[in-house]
Length: 94
Image (cartoon, rainbow, N blue to C red; front, side):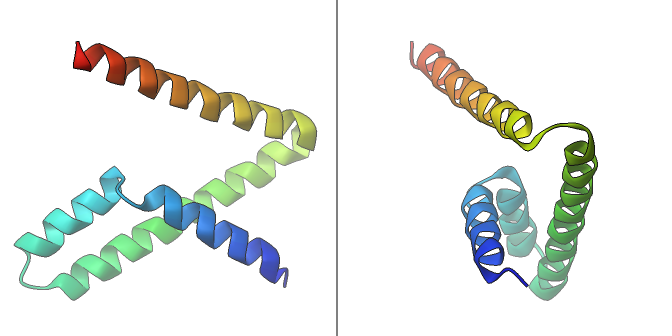
């Protein structure tokens, strides 16, 4: 097993999930529930399934697109999200 890849994947997903909508939903459900363990199990299984589907989709796409193009598309997507976030944030301050 490639432990460096495991570590990079963990750090990337962990940092991406902090403060996102799914974490806020888990906080809300956990706070309003009498059974926080069930909320933990449900949200954990949901994250695992979503990650599994992402890995399957990524593997399928990688079969048809070269790695360099795939990385370029991902970089463009992230840059677009960042610029959109900055743009929308600027407009809401006005």
